[in-house]
Amino acid sequence: MKKHLNTLYVTTQNAYLHKEGQSVVVRVEKENRLRLPIHTLDGIVCFGAVSMSPFLMHHCAENSVAVSFLSQYGKFLARIQGPVSGNVLLRREQYRVADRPEESAEITRCILIGKLANARTVLRRALRDHAGKGDAQTMEKSESRLSQYIQRLEKSRPVVELRGIEGEAAASYFAAFPKLITVDEEAFVFSGRNRRPPLDPVNALLSFTYTLLVHDCRSALEGVGLDPCVGYLHTDRPGRPSLALDLMEEFRAFLADRLVFSLINRRQIQPKDFNDSAGGAVTMTDDARKTLLTTWQKRKQDEITHPYLGEKCKVGLLPHLQAQLLARHLRGDLEAYPPFIWK
Image (cartoon, rainbow, N blue to C red; front, top):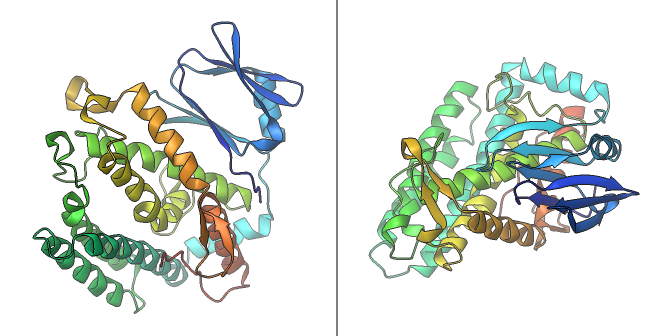
């Protein structure tokens, strides 16, 4: 597992990345703007019109540096991947479990316990800050419902039923979402989750941050030898990293949603940082994307005590640790998959 956690995000349009010795060099308008040793990188994410030399692509593949190409607005386009690591027996067991309904449902149940527990913790922490205020009632109601859904997850259920509980719980959580945004700005009024395309600034921020989270989860799974496209909660679909989407569920509220709230409530992101485009889609400006990416990287450097392992680790390592725990469960070393539950 890599310990450095550094991901290079390239947002400058028409930038060109190439290899010099053992380093990655970013050139813009024939001027070298950045040079980084390859061993310090965990991944490279290119947004929009960013190109890369074939020699650098080969170098990244050989050094297990994940390279992803996204549109300027964060839509996933393509990914460069080197040889798949890990034991083929692990991946075969991953596929077998996906075809065994009871075992697949048990992993799904554990993932959802983590997701709902972390969403509930976000609401509980917000309630402490809103004690005695009128808007606390909505959050109390949502927090209570999430507790009820978590109780329902204590019992084994078929995957289809678990997906139904997840959908109901998500609706309860997002009902309290507007109360978590404390700035009085019409642009940041949240009326519900929408995507493809996002129709308001809050959803634009959420969609972009979720894209970053999927990238990190996919890299973590590939790092331990699991296939990111064969999941348990999310069904198989060509081109969809189902297991990466499964893994990210535990981190949505804890990492992605809290980051969005922080950027808005601290006014690091403002209404002027968004543009309306054709079809009603709302997109971020280049400056807003850079602010979000910088904050995202800083957040990943924060330290936390892992609730299951009892060891201190950086937040950015959490997907890697959870991928390891999932692999250990699939190998039979752990009786059940222990989800990440924030305390």
